[in-house]
Image 1: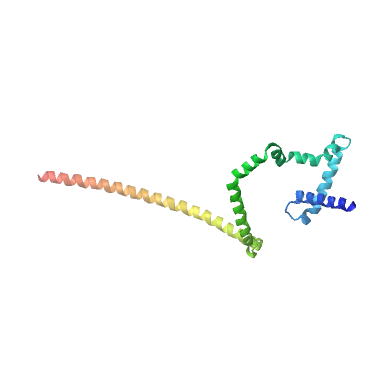
Image 2 (image 1 turned 180 degrees about the vertical axis):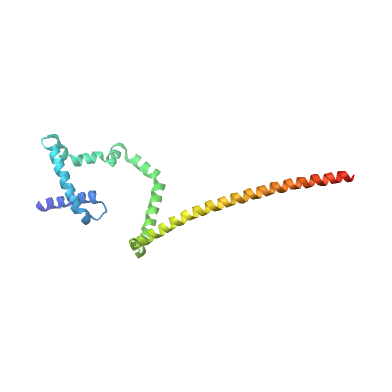
Length: 184
């Protein structure tokens, strides 16, 4: 009997650890978490002292979780045929997701490579390179603005020269016509 109770307690602790820590390193966060949990427990105890309905709610938490689970409501409202139809309607999507998971599994070796694992040691170099790139982008922007200004000046000069040449051509044409009319 005691072994069964101990096993149940261990399962509950394991479930609680998974809920609290998820996939993070629990040994690093454990002391902070324990302190926070003790503070939270003390606050909850102060808030629930003298209230008769609270222990009843605590006793029914597993039942409440069951009823609040979206899968339970789907189970209650959808027939087996409807669930089958939903799954068949989503078959293509599920196959795509399965293929993507297989691709991710294949790429896992790359993520576990020494190059990726050694990346934190290169972060300072990466930050320097990022800063250099940002500086270069700023300089490039200034250079682009300068070139744009020079091109606008060039276009203005070419336009003015073209207009002047057109005026001179018109003047030469008038003079030539005047000479031809004097000769005739």
